[in-house]
Image (cartoon, rainbow, N blue to C red; front, top):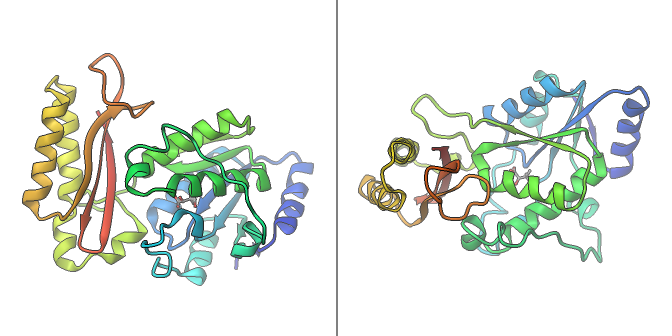
Length: 279
Ligand code: PAF
């Protein structure tokens, strides 16, 4: 079974051995309940570095008080097996006290970018993500770290914090992995009933249609309103946002001169689905 360490000291000792032999290291942070999307991050990591470290930590700091921390899917043994099969070298699986010992008081937050879209609907979420990712990067000091484009705003925030805090790591983006019908893989898809699972691919279908139309020059605001309406008609519950944004700043899209991204978050029963498509 894959070698597993639970403390920062053990992690640093093992990585230090590799570094002493001039081996390059890629970090793949996860919250477990691994699916093909996560395994694709490991494959991107393997294409970049000689040694791969995955982390498995369900980070309490990125869950709001009414969110699903207690129910979040967990499968520690299955995850370890999948990482082993994928050729991952080391698993860092700390307990909460290792990451947040008593008295832990420092938070990392990315102002502006962290306050909109997901940040607006999940207050504190990005501060939780930015804090734990900063800590994991400082603990492992990898050459590369890999994150999925599925969580596009998270990816931008992590790029920004590494730049702003001068953390010497290259952030690699991995494309979203989808089921055959287009639904982006996500651990929380486990919450969908079979009826909801039938509806769920409408999200990707609508994002793709809007991306295509905006790319052809159709008005972005009009298209976002159309997309929202499509999701409502398909049977989605609350739609937190459906919007076309600048692909770098996530400000409202400024026209055809800049790359844009269509992003949405919407509820289907207990599951909150998020996805995005490049224009
Ligand atoms: O994307 C995730 O799974 C988490 O937000 C991350 C990056 C592992 C931080 O907990």
